[in-house]
Amino acid sequence: MKRWTDGLKTSVILTLAGLFGSASWVHAETTHPEAGLVRVLVQDEWGIPAPSARVYVNSKNRVYCIVESDRSGWVWLNLQPGSYSISSTLNKPEADFIDRYASAHADVKVTPEESTSVVLILHQLEDSVSNLSPTALKKMGVADEVAKYINN
Image 1 (cartoon, one colour):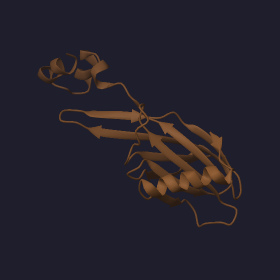
Image 2 (tube, one colour; image 1 turned 45 degrees about the vertical axis):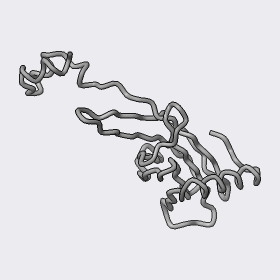
Image 3 (cartoon, rainbow, N blue to C red; image 1 turned 180 degrees about the horizontal axis):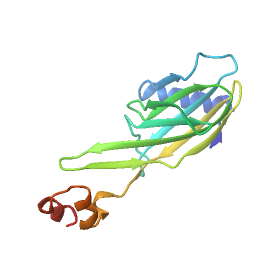
Image 4 (cartoon, one colour; image 1 turned 135 degrees about the vertical axis):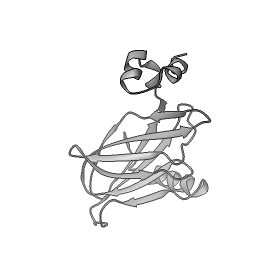
């Protein structure tokens, strides 16, 4: 997490967001004069923006809101002062399977009238089904004929 209080840096970020597409704006609650701005950029492991990634904002161990990144990987959140945990996931359907990606969570402290920037890096998750034993698959009701192809 890095605080962006320098006006020049903020201007650069806003200009870049304008050049690459409109950012997804979310007012998680009615805008309050003391709300803080949190800019979230979701990228893959190579630094490429991740459009349509789900961004999860949690507060006090509860889901506060779930939003989707725009075509440039951005989400902008107006949040009330407080502590939040922010993370992201992305599912990419392929022909015969779904690639799943997730980021670590970032702990963010929102303060009145300040802005914070967060970059979430998505990492590919292991395919948990292919790690299941034939016995586990059988208990789940997967036919033996199908199970033999899952673990090959």
